[in-house]
Length: 397
Length: 191
Image 1 (cartoon, chains in turn green, blue):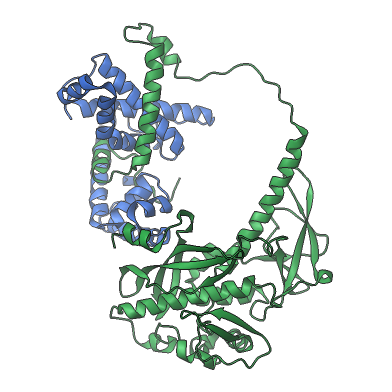
Image 2 (tube, rainbow over the protein chains, first blue to last red; image 1 turned 60 degrees about the vertical axis):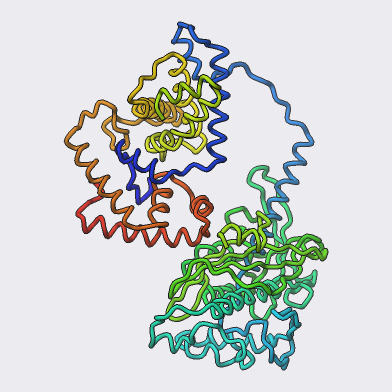
């Protein structure tokens, strides 16, 4: 029973009032139930037409009965099919885990990718297409320095966050600086221009994160065959085991689970981060040959103190996998706004490895906590292939 | 809809008559049923039950058992009795027994515990007033989530919001409702 069961045993009059004031059935549900009632009515009419007197038969007819036993030979091919299905399930789980990781935006204290004045001074760089379709160079070492500074002195995070990465100056997060926020509470509703900037910055961060977590060709993962940790996954249904591979994450920003959490918590509210990423950002100890079950099978593993990512064979060559996102050029649709929270939707353009472009609406709830804008919820309308125009129509825009 | 209006449509087309009756009362029947089967049956069980109720009503019409004046009362009674039958059936499938003394057992038509029931009804009405005082969309979110047992995603779709926004609003509305209930001196046992 739920903890807030206020409607338990509601009296008839209140039920009548709820039905009238808060009708809940969709047209689809109504159609389904009406069709069901018509079908049942017609069956009953055929079996027990008007004038049929034995009501007992009719009552008894409500109970569905079956008898007899059908012998069932389990075909051999089914075994192979279920094995393949189990493998797909494992692979799908890995893909989902990896995809979830990919969807984490970068923290505010790490320079976002659309930095117009970025200067590459480090040894590792990456390129990301910015809002104006110009390719920017990111100084990865500078970002790492920023992250390490934040982690080394957690108590100082709010005051040192913007300091280490000088290139971030031109694209600082739209929210007021944490130190300012601590002393002055936000009071006024921000203007549309600022909403747009916050949304684009957050989204840009997310794309940037996607880039660096998926780019296996850029030395972020140790793909050397000799360093792959091979474990085994046991299927609890069939008892069969499958090979499972982990590769070391050597990206300077993602070297531990704590790194991931540091980033998530710089971008998401704590509750949202825990709720949506709690299971993904877990890493259990692995070792070569370890037999894993569902319970101890996580997208990441720790081996000799280093972070490993479960590898999904074939992933890199899958033409339908998203290769990169392109920064949105459209304006975000701000639907609900208050001083400290707003909801925004903006189309995201994802380009698959085969070059195909997929456009979907990314909707997010952004809240201001302690003067800092954080994402408190995400929802993508990608499953419905919703476009910018569809979305505007849906919200009556 | 009156019985005369229903007869008029039925004379034209039985299916149209059924449809008109269904459209008029489906939300009511659904609400009566979910009030009994919430926490017991699945969504499919509830939909099956709704369709069974309408089959009974169609057949009652055919057999001239409907009376002018209290069509809604008749439909409500059929819905409630059918839902209670479903509850017994589902409980027996689940190898579970429900005591008639159990708080979870729905009120019976005879209204035996008149005093206690009257008090509970007052509390429920007060509760509904408080839910309404939350304003939209919070009141709809609370009713859909806790009366109709809908998920955040389903509510979000019906209101054109995101599931995350629904969850957030629901959480805040719940806290507000709790404090209103406490202020009004309505404890958990009263509702």
